[in-house]
Each structure stands twice: as C-alpha cells, then as structure tokens.
Image 1 (cartoon, one colour):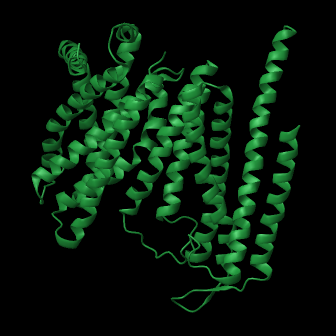
Image 2 (tube, chains in turn cyan, orange):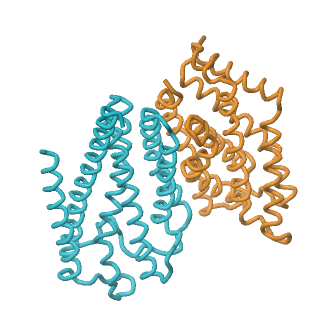
Image 3 (tube, helix red, strand yellow):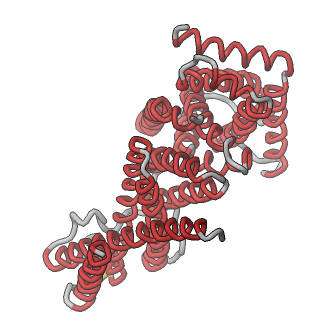
Length: 230
Length: 227
C-alpha cells in the first residue's frame, strides 16, 4: 500500500516537472543560437527531452547490472525482478533516444541517420540488450533465467564504456552542434534542462517500481493458480 | 593439482581431441577461405581492397571464431563431458581459462595460415611494422576468446543453444571489431605521425577490453557454468 502511494506521488511529481521543463523550454527559454553560424536553431529544443531520456536509460542499464550483482550475491528474487525491470525500461528509453536522435539528425543535417558516435553507441547498446531478452526467453527454468540475466546485465554494462570509447576512434564527419552534457547551457536554458532532467528521473523511478510490483503480483497469481490446481 | 596444472590439463585434453578429429581447425580454415571467395565476388573482381583490408580480415575472423566457439562447448555438452569436468576437483574459473586458451590456440592457428593467404590472394600488403600487426591480432584474439568462451557457456545452456551465440556475442564484441579494424587498417596502410594516434588508442582499448573481461569472467564464471 505504501509502495502504491509512493509510486503515485513520484509519478505526479515527475509528470509535472517534466511537462513544466518542456513547456518552459518552448515558451520561456529563448531559441538557442549556433555559436559558429550565428543562426537560430529551433531543433535544439529536442535536447530538453533527448538528453534526460538518454541519461536515464544509461542509469537504468547501470542499475540493472547493480541489481544483477545483488541477485548473484544474495539470491533473492526481488533483485532479479528489479534487474529485469531496469533492462526493460532502459531498452524502452533507449528506443526513445534513437527516435529523438534521428529527429535531430533530420533537422540538423537533413538525413534520418548519421553514423554519429553517440547514436551509434546507442544502436549497439540496443542490439546488446535485445540479446538479453532473446536469451531470457530461451531458458526454461526461472532460476537459470535469473542467474544468466544477472551475468549478462553485468557483462553488457561493462561493455558500454568500452563501446563508447571505441566508437570515438572513428572520426565523426559532423561537428557536434551543442555540448549535450548541458555544460554549454546558460540561464533559462539550464533551468529548463535541469527541471526536465529531475522530472524524468522521478518519472523513471515510478515506472521502475510499478514494473517491479507487477512481477510480484504475477508471481503471487502463479502461486494461487497452483493452489487451486489450475 | 595447482591452478596452472588444472588449466594445462584442460588445454591438453582439447588439443588431443582436436588432433584426433581435426574438425575444428579444418572447418574454421575452410570457412575463412569461403568468406574470402565471397568477398572477391561480393565486391567485384577489380576492386582494390587495400583501403579496407583490416575490415575484410576482421569480418572473416570474427565470424570464423563463432564457428569454433560454438563447437568448443557443444562437444562437452553432447558427450556429457561438462558434467565430468564439473564433478572433477577443478576450480570453475580454471575450466574457463582452460577452454579459453584452447580456443585461442585454435583461432591463432587458423589465422597464421589465413593471414598470408589473404595477403597474397586479395593482393594486400602490410606497409607498417609487422610486430605491431601481430600484437594487434593477438590482443584482439584474446578479447574474442575471453568474451566468446564466456558467452558460449551461457548460450549452450539455453534452449536455442548455438543459435543464440551470434546474437549476444556480436554486439558485445563490437569494441573488438572497431579497434581491431582501426589498428590493422592503420598498420597495413603504413600510416605515420599524427595519423598513427588512433592506432595506438585502439590497441590501448583492446588491452583494456581484454583485462576487464578477464576479470569479469573470473568473477562470474562460477555463476555461468552451473551449480
């Protein structure tokens, strides 16, 4: 019951902050200017959604590995549920990153796809975690599923920084317009960015807890079904 | 038995089994040759391959390594040898190191024959330093075998078995492919000065990859191989 309340509160705060951040970015914050050409860049606004989504998905994959390690250490099913939920959410957020990234590409460079380091890293990440789902679904026993899932989540998380640095070796054709770490943002732009960043984090935690709860409920359901012999 | 002798015994077993059947090295070698012929027809008969020589070599080796990695555990599983290994008083990580070194030896043998053949038949040359070229290949091979052995142990224990390995192994090994291609391309093209910097960073990343995954495998193999 407490969990349910917590989820509702987090979801509420997250949604309000996220919407405020995006509304602020569009209505209040000035349109960013490209320092190289001096032109106004309207498509920069996607940054207020794209970057929070990207960072949340990375955090999610790291969380999946941490919960995986906890599962291997403590052997409690709840950690497997949390790890799986984190991978699922990280994957979903990753798809959003790819989609918004492609929109940026189209607006900035006129093509839907550039082999740009960040997006390419994400593409490989998505392929890596697709393997996670295929692997889990091809295992019969729940305990093996959890064990291999945890191991794979750790392997994949270790691989993320290596992939990122490796892709950086290949010279990028296009300069990166804005430093998306947020360091290049000032004043109202930074406010809008931080507000959506926090909003996204709250939103994410509420989704993670909801998914976690769902696993618990479905397991309870299985136990009840077994009891009545169905 | 000490750790070193346990590993040695497993490697020796794999080599004896391979010497009797010869199926792994021979099939991997034939596969490399077939890919070379496919490249020749795929890219046209008059193409100059030298600008992407590293790419050709590593695509061929990466897919060839898949063949060997799958075999190395299919045998153990089908004949019930894995149970035997697990019942014997051998530390689990030593099973990993034994299998990994075996895979490394077989892949290296195939490459020792295949690299000169690729050079001659696709009209390529190594303009830079040959020891560097060999170092790049060895570093990549270690990475391929560490990750490959770890993941093939996972895949062999699922219902999909060898079907699953490419799906999880190719994305996880993508840093190896990128770094191996960058370094060998640079060395084969004989780049110098400023252009040589990416080659050095690629080799550093390869070394970091090898070390990190050796540690990960050492820590996690207990959980992978079954309880």
